[in-house]
Length: 307
Length: 307
Image (cartoon, rainbow over all chains, first blue to last red; front, top):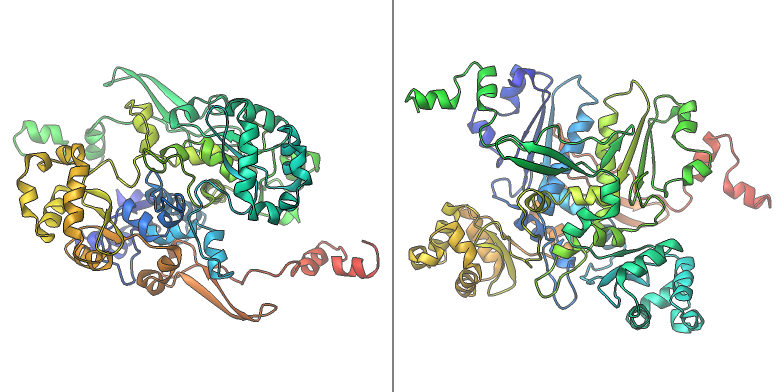
C-alpha cells in the first residue's frame, strides 16, 4: 500500500512509527517518492520530543489563551480545538507544496505548538520587534477605535470602523455628528486612548435598534459590521446558504436519514470542492481495504473464530 | 510582471480588481498559467458579495466567539486576528495545491467566513449530524474529564487526562488513589457528568506545588500537562528555543539593532524554512521593483517634482 501512496500522514509521538517498523527510512525504501508528514505536539526533535500533547495543552503553552478573554477573565481557551486544526492545516499546506516536487521523498515535521504560535502574526511581531507586551483585551480590537463588540437594543454586534472615513460614516449614521467635533475622538490615536468613553457613547446610540437592523444599515453605507452569531445561526445564515457551504447527503444507507457536512472554505475554478461521501459507518471499508492488501476481512476472521 | 508570475494573491472586495482592469480574465490573457487567489470576507459570489469585512466581523459571524469564554462571560473574540490568519492559510494551501497542476490557470476563491467555520471541526459536525447545540464551556474540554485548566499552588496548568489510563496515573500521582474508587468518577462518562466536583478534588491536591513542578512531573509519567504561558513565556520556552523557532537578523541596516522573526511551523527534510530577510523598511524595494517594470522610482519622481 505504501509503495503506491503519494502521501503518508501520522500524528504519533515521535519514535512510535520507528518502533512499528514504519519510519521514514523504512517506508522510503519501498517508495522513494513518498511524502511523509509527521504532526506532533512539539516536533520531531528538540527538548520536548518525548512529551505527550493534546490541543488543550498546546493552546495554553502557545500563549493563545493568555490573550483571549477580558483583562479580568483571561486566560480562556479558544472554544474549539484550534491547535489541532492549525496543526492539520499547516501539514496540509506543506504536503500540497511537496506535491509540486515529486523528484524525491520528503519528510515534513509539523509541531502543533510552533504552527499555533506562527498564526499569531502581529501579536508576536509587535512583541519581538516592537517590545509591546501581549495582553488580553476582551472584545476590543486595540489596533483601532471604534473597533470591537458593542451592545445594541437587542444583542451584540461587531463594528470595525478602522479607517477615518468609516468612523465619520458611523458617527453620522447613528445621529451623533457631535462626536466628530470632540478633541478626545479627533484622531485614531485619540479614539484608541479614549476607546471606552467612545464605546459608551456609541452603545447609547445603538440601543434604539436591534443588532440585525444595525448590521444591515451599517454595511449598506460601507461600515463593516456583523451580528455576533451562535454556530447554528452562522450555519443558517443567508451567505452560508447562498454559497452552498453545506452539503446534504440524502437518506444515507445505514443511518436512514439525511447527513449534512461542511464544504471546505475554498471554491476552485468556479466549483465548490466538497467531501465525496458521507461519513462511513464503523468498519464500512474494512473488507475493501483488507481485500486490496490480500488480507481476509475482520468479519470473516471473526466468523472463522480466528479472532 | 504578471506574465512572469506564478501566483497572484489579492484581498480586495469582489469587483475591485475588475475596476482596476486586473481581473482573472484580463490577467490570464497575459499569463495563461496564472494562479489567481482571491481572499475576501464572504466570497466572490453569494448574498454578501458586496459587504466589507474585517477579522473582528468574521470572528463574530462565524460562531467562534459564541463558543469562546465561560458560560457567564462568552462571547469572546480570540485574542488575535484568527479569521485573517485562517483565510490566509486556507489560500496558501489552495495555492500550493494549484502549483501541482500548472497545465492551466486557476481561480481560487477563499471566503474568510467559510474558511473560519471550516476550522471548527467537530463543533460543527456534532451540531449538523448529532444535533448537539454548541456552547461556551470556558476552559473545560468537555469531550473528556479531567481535561481542562486547573489552579495549582502557583498559576494555571492544563491537564488532559483524556484516556482512562492517564486518569489512573494522575490520581495516583497526586496521592488521591481514593478517587479511583468512587462511583461518581468511575467511568469517563461519570467523570464528565461530575467534572466540577472532580476538578475541586484535583485542584486541592495540586495546590501544594507550582504549575511548573506539576508540568514536569505529570509529563514524565505520561499525563499530558502544560503551564498556561504568556506569549513572551511561550517564545522563551525551552522547546521553542531548542527547535530554533526564532530567527535573529543581526544589526539590521536602517534599524541599527537585531530583529527577531518567527520561522514557520514546518521543518522540511531536516531544514527549518524561515523568512529570508528581515522586514524591509518602508519603500526599501521601490527602486528595484519600479526599475524592473521600466518605471522611474518614486524618489526620483519626487526629486524631479513630478509627484
